[in-house]
Length: 88
Image (cartoon, rainbow, N blue to C red; front, side, top):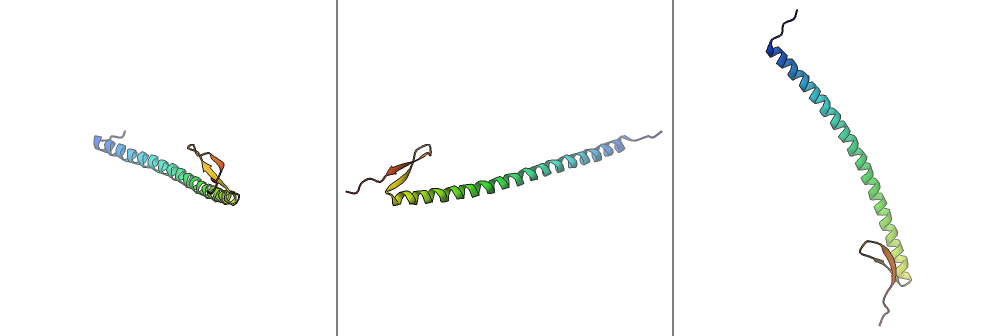
């Protein structure tokens, strides 16, 4: 029959706890890395969409100004078309 001292059992418990802690931290780190990559892809997509929308708004604003109209933004960021005031 095996006989273990308290010191050996504490050491075994410490080694097991360190192994489990490392394993859990590694899994959490991998999940965080995956989430970060997903968020970075979403940010890149959002930036390209915002750039495209900004270019479209600029083009629409230029086309409207050629016709004597302007793009007016309300407080809740809804666009509407208004006329330039007549020159006096």
